[in-house]
Length: 168
Length: 116
Image 1 (cartoon, rainbow over the protein chains, first blue to last red):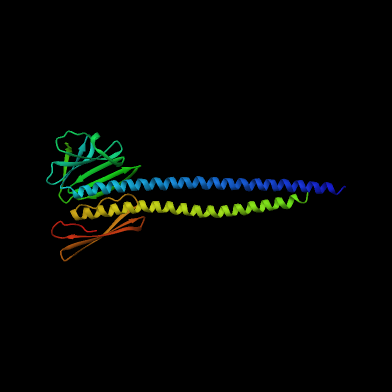
Image 2: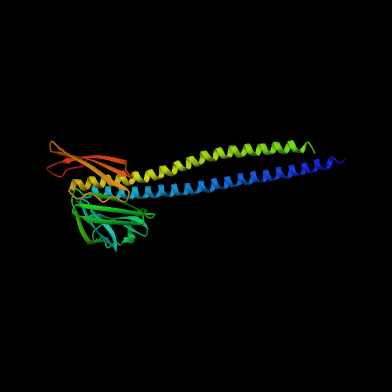
């Protein structure tokens, strides 16, 4: 009967140690799972946002550059106080105005003298800003979206004109 | 008293094995995420480099100065004139590494179409 006491003590000590180890392993498992989940969602959010920003800017710049290349006459000016491109087509009274209004790249295709305003344009895709710089024959188009800026230069084959306010 | 201890040991062993398998899967997932992040950055660099090369080609064709590259980027170009055609190789480097190369040519005498 005397030897049973230390056995009991050893049994209870071992049991509490095992319980502590189990709890520690469970906590480690939980922490690891939480860490991976948080890191994964953070990286995914970053990658998705960057991909969306690049895609939007690429699409906007490609669209503007292609419109400039196919136009017969290119004028860089302002429309309702925002930078705008006035693109003329050959043999038509209609012209296309490209500008950013209300966080959207807008296109306004209209006959001259209709008196339309920037609100009347058709939104194409979200864009924070469009900056235009005309130097000599070279037009620099800068697309701003999500805090990032991408610039591209284009030399319109039919020449480039600087103009003030675009009249629609 | 003696039956409880082996069962607890088995449970612990299973927990350790589970943790090991989970850590292995987590390491693979972290690797994939890091790679995705790297690819996203690389995509941004490539986009920037393509626009820089295109802008340099347009500027060279009109005789204007090459565009000022953003921080970390560099534009290297090599121009040759042969048989009435000016050809140019434009390389865009990011942190010393070539990201994009563009070859373009146009007639020497008159302004013509640049070909990429």
